[in-house]
Length: 187
Image 1 (cartoon, rainbow, N blue to C red):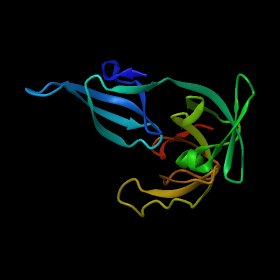
Image 2 (cartoon, helix red, strand yellow):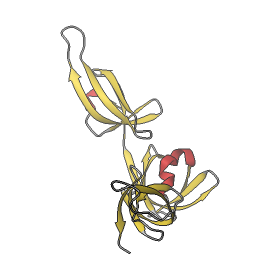
Image 3 (tube, one colour):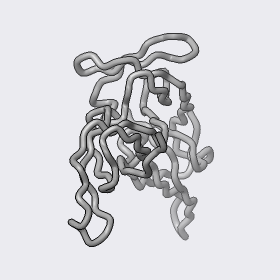
Image 4 (cartoon, helix red, strand yellow):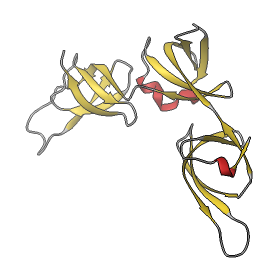
């Protein structure tokens, strides 16, 4: 436990059952009445930003996060299985927890799993990953005024818009935060 005097940018606090990272805070003292702290908090799981005001001296629950490198093993029904790279312990996470990250998970891939109070709260994929294009239509030059794009299915079954010059068998780099094509990787 701590108080609002312990608030700093980047620390994680627990409100209800959700974990939030402090993005910004401002201590304000009005003419009459007590001081208060205006905060901008980001939900770790959903990414939603919350504006919350605390009274000066109010108790808050500060949480320490621990990130472990884990290897994605396999998916069985609605659960994804990961193994801790140091202890070889296995953890199963539901597909609801994994969310959109499932589009870019491939067997034996190393990811970061963030734990708070011993429970997983977030999964962190590498920012950029290379994936093989397994299916795409041939690009026809001249159909567009500039650039143009076409859909391509990558090895994880996700469909990504790619430039017309990308062919089946090419390896492309994708930004896993946005799901967008970055560049073609040399074979």
